[in-house]
Length: 487
Image (cartoon, rainbow, N blue to C red; front, side, top):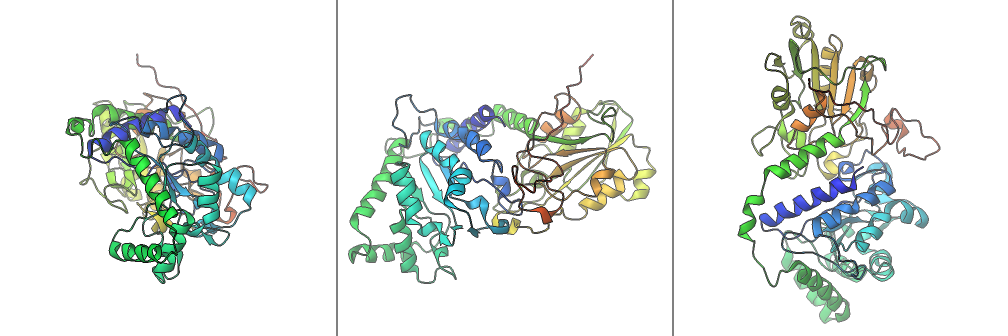
């Protein structure tokens, strides 16, 4: 956990967003994922509300630091190199039954406040401009229609002065099937306190419906005035009236080297070393840069799309190296080892190939394929083939380190026994060099698990502090290594 680093990431994100002409970002997601079967778990910082709360430091990174005497709860954006942020998804999105996306969070008031709400208190104190409502329900009541929580608690109790935005087609989903009785959905959503509505396609139906409801006094004009006032407040804070267009002078900020270095540092710091040698006094890592021949294997070793995961360029993510610039783990390994070391890449080698080539060690890079939202919901949390087969073929014959790319903890038993070392690399994004930096000892491993690593899915949900807590690796676990000194 490093709030200072996440604040720097927020500032870099703001600058690059402004460079593209975008003054508003749908971040941070301050969901507290309590069940890794949820397809959005990787959007959440942790299962622990205290850790999520600390990581709201990304808000002043994105928006800039609030002046000391600013009124709490008032949206703040420092200038034209900052963006309006959005705390989401209000509230309880990470607590749904069995982790099913957009489902029902069954929890009492005390636990809602203590588990899912802290990040909102802190984001509001830090001047977050907007809050996005969750598709999910709380005890059977759709959040998009929950006046008590949106108006009563968020606006009145917490004195949030920014605007509340719906999720994508969020008001349609108040009913089942979606968009049935749309007029009712408009009334319920606006009446609950939603100020801005995300209508991606059929905006004329929304405008006609809302106009009808206001003209016929089903929605009071005071509610419209409140929404407009809040939206204008944020637009003024962002400076949209003075500078409505993109600032072309920021164009050289896009993809700049300092930002890539920051992303690379984030990769190094977030890697978690789960296993290092079969015996504590015989660690495998860090690997030597100078050796005869290294085998690199696995579906994720040379695939930027898989490294980045969902929400990257395309909604559900992508496969391959054609859609963005970056460094794959394979390229990073080749960049890092001694010039005399032979790096052999075979995506899915058979046992005969592994045994007949006199490799000194192997690096196996496997994991989940990209996914977003409901498509990521998984009841079994296994990594797809040929990942497990590659692990068995390689680790059964060679000293091997497995680099696991996933949005969450996944099933790794019984294969973990055959691995000499195991690294949880999460979704490292474009800067795969950060993985090689630590693998070969230029930097030490320092990351800790932000969520519990289960033994079997039958244990889920299982979070730190639960009475039945019996993890494979506990919350906060992570082995460390020292950097290799260059002589």
